[in-house]
Length: 273
Length: 273
Image (tube, rainbow over all chains, first blue to last red; front, side, top):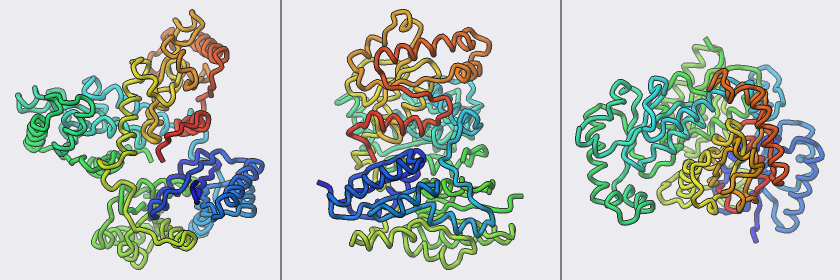
């Protein structure tokens, strides 16, 4: 049995409550049980949540940790007054001081997404996902002018997840192209990309790590062999150096870290925030 | 000129700092300028950040709002002592009380991602993205047993972005299948799915909205016509009802909201947190 449970309570999806809570929990060496309670948007649901938390407190003999991003004051009050957990309340803590500094009242509005069908930013984000999918792995040369960034690198260097992440989280139209033996023989970037050099960003990877990743997909193949991975990576890096392309190594980096670095480098004007 | 600038300062990617700040800013009717300062992980970089913030304060004649998730105490001190903005400090505020409640010291560790190449959860997440891509739009019937969820719905009901989101954020292997006129004629789910009924989740959409979305891609086509959209949606909903499949309408929902609802319904055991 777990001895400590963490609850994430939100009027909306609970995504912010979880991001908030996980960031703070990452500072502690512990593995608590996680319970997400999204869409707690009525006093009734708040009472239910409080009962669940207090039941857990009794069973475990420990205060549950409760992260909330509740906006509705009535709902928040129920949790504040009834809950036997330790309450870490993002909005209650920060919104009031900010009201004072800004000299305006807060809206107590739930969630970032009211009616997305009316939101231009949301529409652009979905378009970016569609674009990035259609331009995954060099599938299409159409409308490359429309792209915000074009990732290049050897197969399995991290291009596809990074492109999709840039589209999904930042609304960037991110194409990606593999660098393949034919390119190395010609010692030049794929021809379709030459006109878009300024948008190109390269991903490279440690050959040993690449060989591991490729071996999971095609065990004992020439494609996955360390020798071949060394050759491809060395050719790709030489090509990016010659072409004056910015690049980074993905070996120990998450897609979030890769994406953040790319954004800092290319500084797209039309970032969706 | 903007009269108010908001800074997001982090030792890591700044994703949490932004999520934190944006959630709170969404409570105010204002459109400040956003400046993200990621990877502020040395005292030197902290001094630079402080100079930038203080310069902004002078130019705008208003305190900048500064959201931080700085973990390194030395770096945080520089910002706390030197910065003329209004500091909203997530870790400083919540980590100490939590240390007391838990009776353990925090790690002051930067970011969620140390070396992802050694993380099983990260590996599974990348695998989930690959799976979901390979099973987008009914491309493959292979290994459907391996899926965590199978989304079905008419073309452009939101299946693809939702599948990719479930994979990227939650590490779920999410396949998706279109419901097409052939299925409506047979009045049955696509044959490959019948064995996996318990994992199926349906997406539907208001026909007027669907017609709008389809018209952007294929203007004035029969595919996009309101009449055809009405027919397809009505057939799809009837089919899902007959098959006893859980479903929701995506019309006014974001992919985050759709994904949260699906997670609540299917409650996968192997959620990545």
